[in-house]
Every structure is written in C-alpha cells, then in structure tokens.
Amino acid sequence: MSLRQPYDPDNIFAKILCGVIPSVTVWEDDDVLAFMDVFPQSEGHVLVISKTSRATSLLDIEPEALKRVAAAVQRTARAVDKALRPDGFQILQYNGEAGGQTVFHLHFHIVPRWAGRPMKGHGHAPMAEAAALRDIADRIAAALD
Ligand code: 5GP
Image (cartoon, rainbow, N blue to C red; front, top):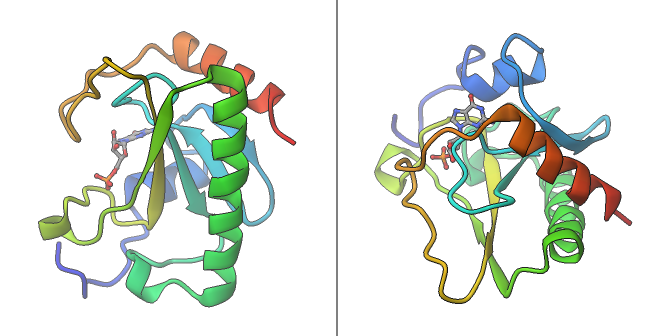
C-alpha cells in the first residue's frame, strides 16, 4: 500500500478499536490505546495508536492527535522500563508498504532490548499466547505513572 492510499476502516487495528478482533490492552484513554503486539519481536513489545485519528502514516496525522500519541508512547515506554528493566528499547514506526508498514493505521512500536538477546525480525516473530501477553501487560500497567 502506498503512502497515499485512503484509510481502510477494516484494517486490523480499526477492528481492534471497535472490539471485532481481540487484543491485550496495556492501558487506554479516550484518545489512545496501548496494546501488546501479538507477534512480539521481543518480550514486552507494545503498540501505541490513536483512537481518534484515521491517519495511515506519520504524514497525515493531525498535530493534536500526534501530540497525544507521542505522550502515550513516552508514558508507556517509562512503564516498560520500570516493569521489565530492559537494557534499552527501540521506538519503531513504519510508513507505507515500501517503508515496512503492514497495518495501515499509524502506530508506534515500543520494543524492549536486552544486551546479547537478539530481537526477532519485523514480520517474522511467532504468535504469542494471550495469557503470556496478559501477564506482561499487567506488569507494565502496574508500573504506569
Ligand atoms: P507494522 O508492520 O505495520 O509497522 O506493524 C504492525 C504490527 O502489528 C506488527 O508488529 C504485527 O506483529 C502486529 N499485528 C499484526 N496483526 C495483529 C493483531 O491481530 N493483533 C495485534 N495485537 N498485533 C498485530
């Protein structure tokens, strides 16, 4: 999908937002949702999305919605750090199919990293068990400020 395709209201994250597809929530408010990536590239891989914007990429999100998502990414990353104590973490954000994006509802990845522990490839990680994701999500949620 090119950068200039219109928003598809049937994309996976839109379906998660309206409850058609289940997901493991870390936290949410009226503007944002932080939830576990079901194909985690490392333990504690969280996705953060806007609930209000229909932006497919970074190019078309409204400034106010971007501000709220960015603040949510920082809040969630702080909780990931407190809960899981990684050695580092990556914030990843892909735009357009050629840019590695596979779900066309703008999102940020928070991928914790540990020294000596390779991260699984984007699009090549196995599906995680919902119960294991729930356990990690609860630990991250308990560490939220
Ligand atoms: P992108 O490739 O667009 O940057 O990232 C999409 C992400 O969504 C991938 O990391 C992929 O593992 C994740 N993903 C794909 N389908 C689902 C799903 O049904 N539920 C959840 N929680 N994550 C998904």
